[in-house]
Length: 389
Image (cartoon, rainbow, N blue to C red; front, side, top):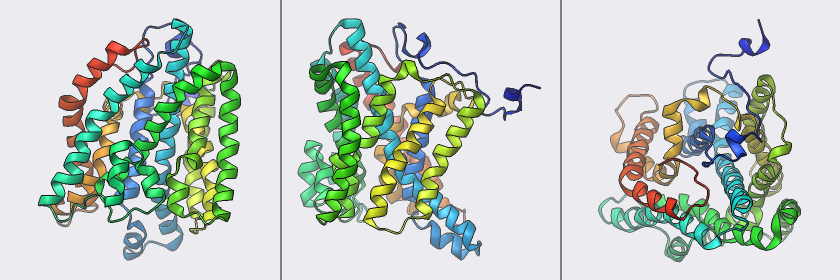
């Protein structure tokens, strides 16, 4: 029996070299369905972190041994780094598309890129801000409106800075949009950087971003920065963006990993954040040390999945959930707010289950009726076709 056949059927894979035409070659459409599934798991990690915030108290009440309880709690809390995986994935995909556009067209259409990003992000974003931020709080007392100091940030994609200089406030469902703000800032700047600096200088710029973020956090801690500042301010969260770009830039040099190597990388990438959270103490210094480790973990996960044919990652329902992952992420905190009123009494984890089902329903409806018409418009401005609508 071959080594590959010993792997569980669920994850058996046929490795595909990252540099082959199926992923990065001259095919007309650049689309990696396995990354949609990975995007769903990034959302799921964040969702479980938010919906099981009381995991430690629950496991203790069940009489679970301390060691196992600590491991469960650390696993749930490690879901916070699903945001880092989102950042890394976004940077990898955007950089890959821009590089392909440069190769095919001889230039980067910055205006066209900005239009495509606006058509993808803005419709759902602003509808959600209007409904969840201002309409629903008028009728449901448990849906908190955004803090007055956050409103301008929500409307200008600078909410991450508003939180960094204040705090999370009353816990509005719109708080989750801080990461969308950071990505929009990336979308605004990155194509201009690539256009002005060129491909040759982009590697040095990405490495410089990693070094800058690391030392900037150290200076910020000495200056008295808050945990909100370290978590939400753009200069301190540059590592995932830089590493995603480096993976895209070095795509042809990445080896064609075997199945067992991929599995090991995937397991290690998943384990590192959990181990980090076991050592978490709330110290800002530990926070500063953990963030680059989380980026390494996300990179391992991405490299283990991209170009592979893992059956789990090519499972069509999971690919679909990854396709609607933007809506899943946007709606999940709102769904969690409603979950206590929708859960079946006595059902274990009933609130989490009801919140997940409501999130999926809202995201599916949003994708079908709100986002898809704009996605079709977006394709008119695309030089490189990507995800099918």
